[in-house]
Amino acid sequence: MQNMRISFIGAGNMATSLIGGLIARGLPASQIHASDPGEQRRQQLQQDFGIQVHADNAAASAAADVLVLAVKPQIMHQVCTDLRTALKPGQLVISIAAGIESSCLARWLEHQSIVRCMPNTPALLQQGVSGLFAAAAVSQEQKNIAEQILNAVGISVWLQDEQQLDAVTALSGSGPAYFFLLVEAMVQTGIKLGLEEATASQLARQTALGAARMLCESPLSASQLRQQVTSPQGTTDAAIRSFQQDGFAAMVERALSRAAERSAELAQQLGK
Ligand SMILES: NC(=O)c1ccc[n+]([C@@H]2O[C@H](COP(=O)([O-])OP(=O)(O)OC[C@H]3O[C@@H](n4cnc5c(N)ncnc54)[C@H](OP(=O)(O)O)[C@@H]3O)[C@@H](O)[C@H]2O)c1
Image (tube, rainbow, N blue to C red; front, top):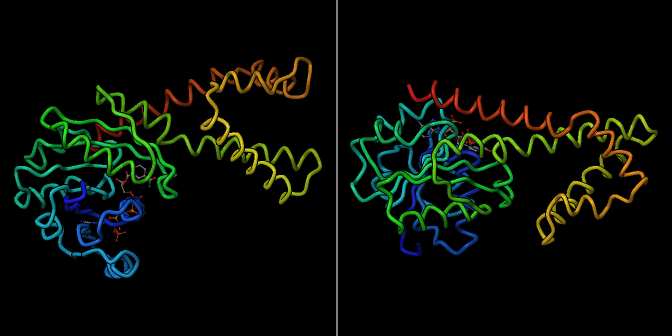
């Protein structure tokens, strides 16, 4: 990837995280381009990273071996249609837009080398996880490049079937919000149990961080870790039993299934 020239079309939150991650991993700024309508945003990127910036997407595309489409899904159709004539046959196109299928991108761009990704917000802290799907025309070398780019903001997993991106969206794409919801409820309950809000918040946040690190750093499964901290008849046991009696697993299943359905619905709407 060291000789690759990468252009970002749309230079918002996600693109900025990826650019920061790539530079932190040693990709020279001179090989990174970005286009965005916001003049202030372009200036900021130039100042922060020393990359080349463009107001014109076609100019950014012309400069690149790899194009990362990082605009909102709602404008992707228009952006792709405008880029169509600027694309070169060997270019790899990576889309990070939620819900736009690779077949739509291929149709809109009249281009076949497409990798579709579903990152998540912790990418902003280089702690993200992305699901990746490659269209049939993508070579192994191009897959390696896509993986290296997404790994600049976390880790990635390849999917064999594009429909699995709906499950990825439900699990990891929307997942950070589920943890935030749990922390919100824990803080509110901590307050009801007599804690100051600031104290409850500090306790809940640090507990989330500690638990996340144990999950990632321990060889044990989530279930084993839970059992390890749950003494029979103890306080954790009382809470877990209460969660289970209230149908916690079924509630999670319903919520994630609904998110996956919504992802498929949005893909249908956006792909028109
Ligand atoms: N943020 C996440 O956690 C996350 C997670 C998974 C996937 N994604 C996907 O990543 C993509 C980008 O998300 P984001 O959060 O980075 O959004 P964002 O911060 O809004 O970035 C999009 C950028 O594209 C610019 N833009 C608008 N019209 C453009 C055009 N015609 N050509 C080029 N650039 C244009 C926007 O400028 P203006 O602001 O001036 O319109 C903005 O700077 C989305 O498709 C989203 O689905 C994001």
